[in-house]
Amino acid sequence: MSPKIKANNPKFKKPRKGKWAIMSITIILGLAALWIINTFVQQIRKSEEEKVRIWASAISQKAELMTSTETFFDEVAIDERRKVKLYIDVLQSFNNKDLGSDAEFYLSYVSYIVDSSRTPFMIINRDSVITSCGNIKPTIQEDGQLIGTKVNPELLQDFSDNPPFHYSVWGIPLTLIYRESQIYSDMRAALDNLNRSFLSEVTNNSVFVPVIVVDSSKQNILGSGNINPNEFDSPKKLSDKLELMANENQPITLQLANNQTVFVYYEPTPMLKLLRIIPLIYLFLALVLLLVSYNLFRTARSEEENRVWVGMAKETAHQLGTPISSLSGWADYLEGKTLEEPYLGEIRKDIDRLDTIARRFSKIGSIPELKPEDLCEVIRHTISYMEKRSPRKVNFVTTLPDRPVIAPLNRYLFEWVIENICKNAIDAMEGKGTFTTILTTEGNHIHIDLCDTGKGIPASQQKYIFESGYSTKQRGWGLGLSLARRIIQEYHNGRIVLKYSVPGQGSVFRITIEGEK
Image 1 (cartoon, rainbow, N blue to C red):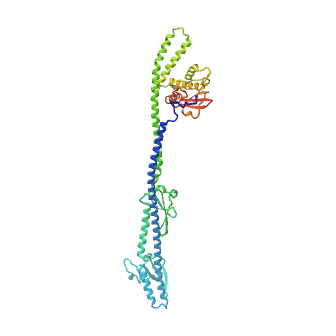
Image 2: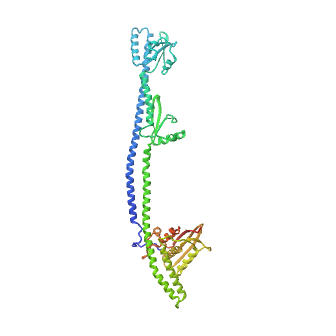
Image 3: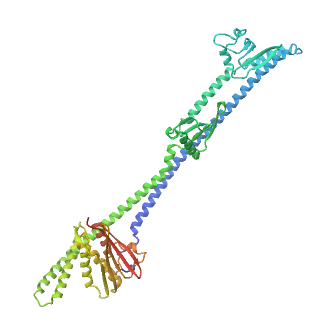
């Protein structure tokens, strides 16, 4: 089995230029389409990311606005308490005998300030009797009607949000209680409503951002939106989900009314997640398309080769028919003549061999009939025929089991495979060496090793030996091993491989088929 392939042999060319050209064009087109789609997807993804960024920025800015508003309300509350304190200081100034006529002026001035701020207040004595009040509008009584009455618990509760002022005038202990002005209360209610609507806006946003809002402990959920509640329906799931979302985006810290700190966790939108994996999906589809294109190309090429081989085989069988018939007639004629019997027998064997070859070629392209055959007998018959027609310096060694080994075969085609490998081995050994045939069984598998001591095949050429057109002979067609593989794999559902080959030492081919069940 010679390792050399003639460089000028037109029947076999290692690089299939046409195939690789089509493959290269397919890859280039696929990559170009991938680049175009990926560019489009990246633009959409950037647009989605920009929407999320704008949403997060708007949330942060609104949170800052609410924090500033809360600070403003705190300052207004402090200012109202300062005015009330000033009013108390003026009242207590009446204890100073040196104040004179200025006391009336100061009292009028401070009363004006308190009245202008519309701060509701009441002054009560130790008996809980209202001695003075202002800016109170109960449902039944006016301010003047409250003076001299005992304060009721409901009204007292209404003034309990702020610490009272305790003072005395002319030795009479008094207590001033107050609440925020109506304007302040209305604005505070509006701010509370804004807080609630703000959280609702955060969770139910128009850009479909998945959001979870938690308090400062990060254990209590204040709201969520655009996300499956089953993903955080337990403390462990909530902790894992928040950690996962924090890895995606830095949580936004919000300062709400009453100094309540909340954290807004969010993650990319479902559209953005999908856009991230679309390039991978397209790459997978491109690879599938590439493989399908390659298989279609290979199948078309294989079918074309099949048509060539079938046509060549049938034409060969047709051409062999005439000389076989003629030789058969001459053999019948010579049987009655004075020709030595051994020579006549060998002529008859060669005629039978030609008939076998014609049968082999006639079966190419059709489904052959497989019959149970004893592989040991088939191999002995084939090797015996080849041994008598080989150079004397070629030694044939056959190692077979003592028992029959039955397998479904088409005898004509299977003998052809053995003969083909044997002829190649004899050519590789250049008429001198050893050809060994070993048959072994492994369960229901039957292995036939065909070994020679020829030139061997270089590793760089071994992958081409079963391709059509591979030939080491100047006038060879390069179809022997290709047809042998087709006969074993397609007709006998087996395998034929180059098990071992080293230049200068020889080669081993292994045929594996299934035994009869």
